[in-house]
Every structure is written in C-alpha cells, then in structure tokens.
Image (cartoon, rainbow, N blue to C red; front, side, top):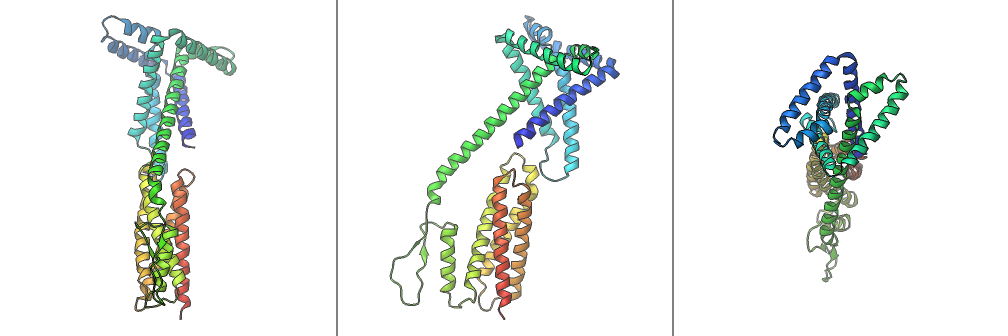
Length: 369
C-alpha cells in the first residue's frame, strides 16, 4: 500500500510539472525561454570545471541537461506546494511529511537520475539513444491522438519532453529500488531479531515439585520473569487463592491483572515500534495513546492486585473505569493505523481485551453487596 502510494505521488508530480511547462509555453513563451536560457548558462558554467570540453559536449549537447534542470525545478516547486497543502489539510494527523523531507527526497532522486543517465551514456551511448527514440515515439503517438493537427507534438518536441520522460522513468526506478531494498533490510533485521529472541521466549513456568503442607498451594517458579499468558496467569491466580484475605472474586481479579499487565507491555512495544516507522510524524497521536494506556494499565494492575479487605472500593472502581476508557481510546487510535502497521492492529485487540476484563471486574465488584 505504501509503495503504491509513493509511486503514484511521483507520477502525479512529474506529469503535473509537464502540464505546467506546456501551459507556460502556450501562454508565457518568453518566461519559459528565459528559464531555459538561465538553465543553459548555469549548466555550461558548471561544465567549465572540465577543461577538455568533454563534459560540456556530453551534458549540454548530447544529454541536454539544461532541459532536465528546468523540469526538475518545476517538480521541486510542485512538490513544495503539494506537501504544504497536504500538511495543512491533515493538520497534526497521520501521514504528515515535512516539506524539507519531501523536497530532499526529490532532489536526491533528480541528481541520481542525472548521474545514472550520464554514466549509462558514457558506457553505452546506443542504449540511451534507444531510450530517447522510444520515448519520442510514445510521446508522438500520444500527442497525435490528442491533437491531430500536430501543434502539440511540435511543442513537446521543442520542450524536449522525450528526455524528461526518460529522466522521470529513471527517477521512478531508483525510488522503487530504494524502497524495495529498505523493506528487505527491515525484514531481514526483524527476522534476525526474532531468531535471537526466540530462545528467551521459549521459557515456560514450571510448578515446584517440593512437597507442600495441606491447604498450601504450590506456586509456579521461573528461571527468569516473563509476562506471558501461559506463565503469569497461574502465578497470579494461585497467589490470589492462597491470600489470607480470601478475595471474593479471584477469577475476575486474576483476569483483570493479567490483561492490565499484558496490555501495558503491548502498548509500550507498540509505541516503540511506531517510533521506528518511516511515517513517525503521523503516528504521534498513537504513541501518546500507547504511553498513556501503558501507564494507566500498570497502575490499575497494581491497584487491583492490592484490592483486598480494607481497600477503598471507590478508588478501585474509579481506577477500573479510567483504565477501561483509556484502553478503548487507545484501541480506537491504533485501529486507524491497523491496515498499515500490524503492531497497531495487535495492540488494538489487546486493548479491547483489557477494557473487557476491567469492565467484568467492575461488574463483579458491584455485584457484591
């Protein structure tokens, strides 16, 4: 989904820039010609570094880099305007991108596409000429279909759109290649981290085999504390059932304590995962909800674990209500990003489970006269 959106944004920026260039030629030809003249002077000035003149021959007279600089400048302006408008429309919501970051991406792609085009021409000029020829044929056919009179084709040839199209395709290929490599590296890193952590996650609780006196429940022991459904639940339930105060609803309490601590860990992990995402600015609200929910769940789990005889029932009921509300708010925010980020989808389900456990615990408390 992200790659498709990224590719479409690059295509829209390119063709919108071409449309602006064509419109400017029809309505402000002098301005466009002045732009090409300034670009040509700039490029020639840069090629003076090579005293042999070969750089000027290749860059100016063969590849016509001055034309590409003009379309590149228009693309920068379009990117600047679209990104600013998009951020204004989204406000402080998700998927925002800073203008500097968007323009920086485009500048890097423009420079790399020019470098690749020059390098390929240097080693295989026929290949680059073939690209240009194919591009001219495609543009000529499209222009003829739009304007059978031939005026549009003449304008497009004058503006060097065939070269622009080749540069745009190179930019798209470079962008796709970079995204694929980045996602592959991210997947490999996640796989390595999973393989490294698997031995630690494989530990399970074991019940002590030591003989116990009548009426004393054997408690699970751990080589290393791990908060999993398989390990934590028996320990909490066994502790509550062996408590001298004899809580009246140990099942609801153990489920609530388990859900609160698991939700706290999941929300903390989700916040950390959001901070590692590319679109972290669009996930700021989700991170805040995660951290708030984690803190409230930790406090609620501790309060419920201490809610025996003599505990304030009003404080306990208030804490459970607050925790249930925080979990539902966090779940709602995480679901907004669930289609894009799997960790948000998992966190939303865990928050729903915790909210349900707190509601059941609250109902159990109120059922006791």
